[in-house]
Length: 360
Image (cartoon, rainbow, N blue to C red; front, side, top):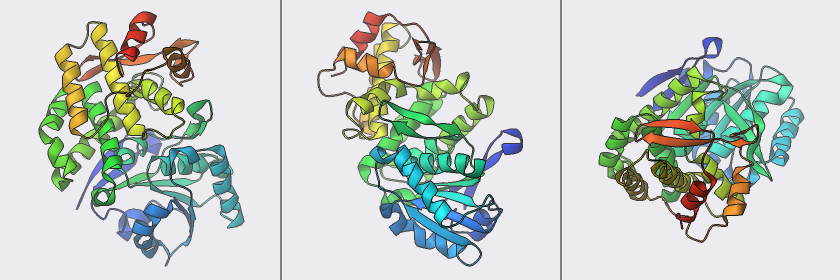
C-alpha cells in the first residue's frame, strides 16, 4: 500500500511514493530507470539491511553496481564525491545510467551532486531510509557537499525522477537518529501549518512508538508542504528560504563543533529555539509559543539548548558564512506566529546576541 504525492515542476515533475515496500516492487522502481545501468550509493549499515531487496529487483535486468561510503556528515566532502565519480568511470557507466541514493541525507546529497555533474547529468532516484531524509533532504533537488568553512557550499539544484519512501525502514533507525528527523517535521508546523503543529503535539508519542498510521500522516504532511513550496520556488529565490527556519543557527553550531557533537536535526532543533526566542524578542511570538515549541521538541527527544556558554563572536562569524547571506546581509527566517514564517534581512545585533546568549 502506498500514497503518491507530486512535486510539480513542469517537464521535471516527479512522484513521491509513501508507504511500505515502495522500492522492492519492480513496477514502481523500473519505470523510472531509462537505461540498462544503475549505480547504487549507500553505506555499510543501510546496505546490510536493504541492498539485497533492491538488488533482487534490479540484477535480472540491469548492470547494477554498488558503492559504499563511510557513514557521517564528516564524509560529505569533495573527496568522497570524487571517489564516487572514480568508481563510475571504472565501471564504465554511460550517460544513460541511473544513480540510486539508498540511505540518509548525506548519501542523498552526495549521490545527487554526482548525478548532476557526471557526464553533465544522469538519472537519479532517491530511496531515503532516515526520517530526516524522508521528510526533507530527499525532496526538492538540493544536492551537494560541505566545505571546511561552510555547510553545503558546493552543490547544485538537481531534481530526482522519483522518491521512494518506505515507512517500515524507520523501524531499524536508532532512536537518536529518528528524533533528529522529527526536528524537520516540527519545522513544517512552525513555518506553514499551525494545525499540523497542534497535531504533532497530540501525536508525538505515537510517532516515537513508530505507529505506521501516525508516521504516514507526518511524512505525507511534511512532504506535501515541502512540495508546495518547492513547486513555487525551486531555486530558493523567494519563499523556499523559509524552509531554513532554525538552519542558519543550526549550521553554525555544526561548524563550531566540527560536525561531531550534534546530528543535523539536533542542531536544527537548537537553532529553531534560538530563532523562536529572537522572534519573541521582536514581539512576534509569545512566551507561550516559544514554550510550546521547546516542549514539543523535548517530547520528541531533541535538545533545545546548546548546553555550554556560546562565544557569540565565533557564532556570528560562523553564521556569516551561511548560504543565506546575500550581499553581506545575514538573512534569518523567523516565526511571525506558530504556522507562518518570514525572511528578515535586518535584525538588531544586540537582540541577536541576547538570543544566542540565553540559549545555554
